[in-house]
Length: 295
Ligand SMILES: NC(=O)c1ccc[n+]([C@@H]2O[C@H](COP(=O)([O-])OP(=O)(O)OC[C@H]3O[C@@H](n4cnc5c(N)ncnc54)[C@H](OP(=O)(O)O)[C@@H]3O)[C@@H](O)[C@H]2O)c1
Image (tube, protein in one colour):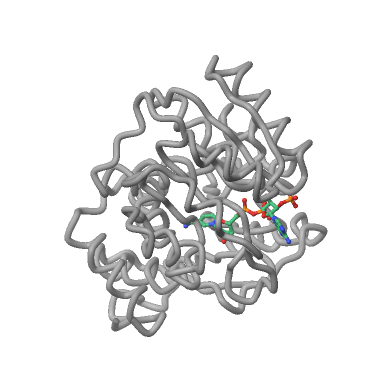
């Protein structure tokens, strides 16, 4: 990648990606590549910001004319009360990962759900009528559940260490979309029972993420999955978590977290710049990420 598109003048946009911790963040590699492709005079790099620093961060954005940024864990929920406008779905599931300033007002939206659906679609996987099992009930699970419901999934089960969070998401989905949704804990017996009935599994917990320090103790529940059920991972780093490798070893079609990241960039570039990223550039983004991770 060269930086010839960055003119380093008064019109150069700094577009930060903020979260905590950020030392293993890989998204800026592909954003900068896309800025180059579309000759956008902008540059992105990561910053570590804690939730209690968000108000100060927005003041810094005002001062420095930063009018676009993206957020990751753990800022997607605490940013919401600080914004002027958030679409109904992102507010409902408390998940905003992209912000732009329009007429002096901060407008936020969550794109993880659309990114996840785009990655499944690119892999030729339809969700219509499927019984989906979502593992985890963090900031991306509800918004992914919402998109599954919108695209006609038949039923959802949400499994999480903290049952109350899974229950809350399931109830919210039921009330707002009418989908049949239930919640359970993430014990291996419970997961095996859910896996037996699943047509699609989406791993949305942080277990197995690089540097997170915790991973699945027992993946035997994957053996209960019917043959050929697609298995998707949200985690980007590492590209092949133990969870995903085990699903692949058992013969399931897999979808990687980096596909979700690249797919949501299509939506984000549309939101920020009104640009639709083409297929060729999305493939290039995927190659860049694979190279970055040493594949
Ligand atoms: N590919 C992409 O484009 C993309 C986009 C966004 C996020 N992601 C990835 O998706 C993952 C989830 O993101 P998020 O924002 O939803 O995270 P989050 O809000 O922090 O939620 C974390 C989830 O992991 C669970 N968890 C954490 N530690 C656990 C443990 N020791 N045992 C069992 N479960 C545990 C939490 O369960 P509790 O509720 O019990 O705490 C919760 O369900 C992250 O790895 C993130 O990097 C990928």
